[in-house]
Image (cartoon, rainbow, N blue to C red; front, side, top):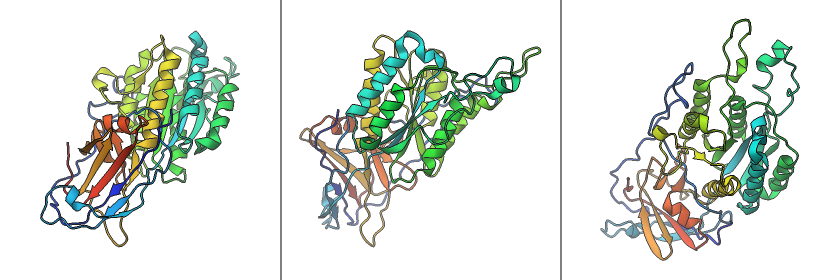
Length: 403
């Protein structure tokens, strides 16, 4: 559901307020899936979280930036406000990585999943950049069992280097994505490692100023390397293991530019909860209220209302990355001290100065080390996405309020 008009004003105050206060360091995620895999470690409890709101606002909502001003000895944020100049929010770039393995044909999961995707595509912000890659591609699905060389690696890297639908504004790619999923049938295994590796490479090279996300939708435990058994050689040599999968996701998040990973587990993926939760943790999107100690960092969808719940989750994720990220504008000839930044949200007639929260659960945080963009998380992002008029202000020049 598209959010109604979102008024955004970025308030910059360059008066001399207190310069004390730190930004707080982001936690370092660990390898997803952890135990029992070569090179794997158990994912830690702490990690940056993604936020799901509902709906999406119109792109580039203009607001105001206030520069300069006179603090007049006051200590509050408002004393740092003055002259106005335009500002805007930044829709994200999102690549859907869709599992079309054979098990997706069970219990009506494929038509339910594609139906939910269609609902989200119809409801999301048309300016949100989105694309889709399916995995496996199906090129080697006819590999005969007697061909050992083919069987050893036949699906591990069977994913397109360029997505089936390259990332672009949803108003241009939406119909292409819908046509692709309408002509795709479930088949094959679950080569998740290379699906994500190729997705990360593509997204890291994408020419965009937007925040970059990958959204993995899967119903099964990834296909991993199988050690030799008796006379049979090791299988799926290039499919990797849990440790490699966790490292790929963590490395993508820590790269420049960073690519973060949302994870949705469909019915049938219950045996892979540790892996999927670890991927979300490492990907910087552990959901609000989620915890890797209980394997709940990702979004797990049950079988009872699968299509309805999946559609709602997809819409929440699309809305959060579309409507809750804002640029921090820099006045001409000036530099912004990232430790002197505060964020004020006005929604429903109530004004709140929200705190910087590096766990990204309830507050705001910088999107990456460049500290040129901020993203709002938790109830305030939800309030922005509810369709009521909301105002976001960023006040520069006063000590950052930290959680």
